[in-house]
Length: 503
Image 1 (tube, rainbow, N blue to C red):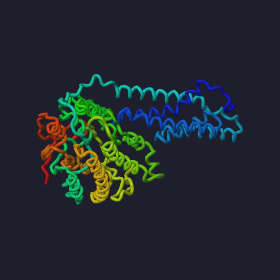
Image 2 (cartoon, helix red, strand yellow; image 1 turned 45 degrees about the vertical axis):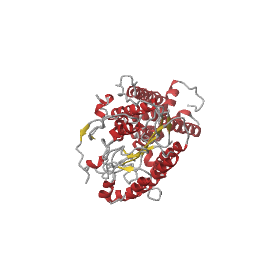
Image 3 (tube, rainbow, N blue to C red; image 1 turned 180 degrees about the vertical axis):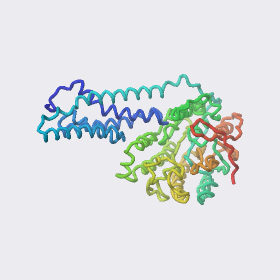
Image 4 (cartoon, rainbow, N blue to C red; image 1 turned 135 degrees about the vertical axis):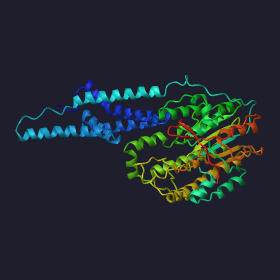
């Protein structure tokens, strides 16, 4: 069998497509079962296909045969994706053929026919392409058109203009009493610095939900989730429910009402792009790995390999994401624009993985990662930490986070002294599944120039923009009574929760 001189026939084409089709199918399958939006697909897909092609070309050059090079690429892809059964089959087939050939030579019998690479090409390539087409069809169904979805109820904000509005959503930032009572962390210095900058700190604030998607959706709709038309009859597919919540955030009627008043809508992005206003007039992409990209790495051996080769890399990338999200606030505040700005920046701190210490030095990822926990796991039991260990790491990360946040908000105050600035968290730290009340104890502080007592004590997210609109846009939205729901277990499987009063 001559190598490298045969015409590229159908068998070879199928085989050449096999590794790339397998990579694409795997990434699409992962997307379907994840909460990520469709826009998060392109980067892992391009990187995956690019690396696959690179391995395929390199192996082909080294072996001087395209089919053998592609076979090696298929083995590498199967190992990289953690498809161990396929990797085993691809490695055992040539080994089996070599054993048979050796036995025949010892018995002085005629050697077996050449390794059946063409047959494998035909079968393996066709299967990989079929898997890709099947997964692409599932993606098309999962991310189908939105026209059939109920539209959001419109929010009417008569008039035009208004103050700049900056909303900084700190993910999983616990209220001060939780930090003190559970971890012995005194957060009074940070809160005092906010008050010195003109903020009013709400010491009784509580969130309505313990999931970012629902907190942001209810805020931007100014309604409880159960009143939003989009969520009336949710699918029972977990990933589908998260995608539905993403659609709810993107349908944000409050942002649209501000746009009609002449506001420019600006969004900072986080790893959880599914909770970001990615349809804003200006989207500031931090460029760091998304939640879906982390998931791809964690579900395959890639994260483990990265941890072994570059132990602090994933933590540094997460820290860079936080720093970039806060820096984007400064850049927007120091820039110029025609009309007022409404900016929402979701910052994933002090949410786990608690990636730096108080001095800003990289902290190691939890020992459970990626063996038994994900980068954003928040229960200390799953993180395999004691409460003291968790608290020590949290204290350092919180100190670093506080400095970054103060630097950004003070810059906004300096550049735009008349801007409304809200610093809040979407929920509590959620460190203990046996203390669900803590999940709702969130941070809330607001600076409202020219207006007093805009937000009553015990403010909760669903009322934030109702209160702000009443103060600055002369509306008369009634404030909704406090209610809370626990997602159990699905995002939209909501169980009413009677949150205990603060200690």
